[in-house]
Length: 159
Image (cartoon, rainbow, N blue to C red; front, side, top):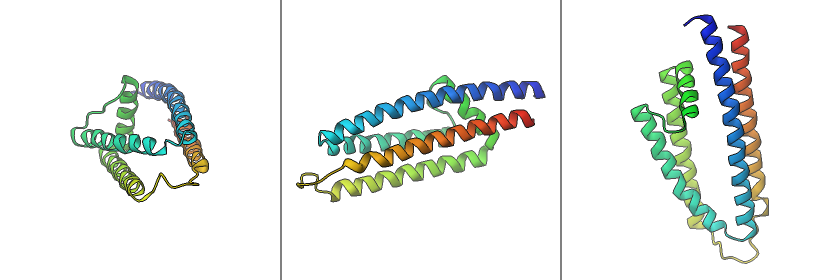
């Protein structure tokens, strides 16, 4: 690939990553509103079960991607992931996928242990501060994505 083509590809990926960040923030906003709604309504158990059902689905999709190499998602997501996979190399990409699967599995096991060991009907149980970790994760997500986009910019200018 010529230098100019590489620069154009990085520019395109930057644009797609910014669009993905915008959609990710919209998704996080909707999740945050659902979190607040369910916490205020005392329906934390329902929210927890939805998450417990979602995690195995995410794990299976990640396993499928790891085994087959095909990525499930929108055209833009597949384009970004293919670019990252090529840039990182096959070995690092597989390690990151395995790390993702292990992290999701650990989260699922921890959440399942929490569900089965918590009495959600107990009086005086408050979940008011439960939104703060979500806000921290949201902030961290934005910082990470912005820094990765900026690194692409630096790569584009450095060549």
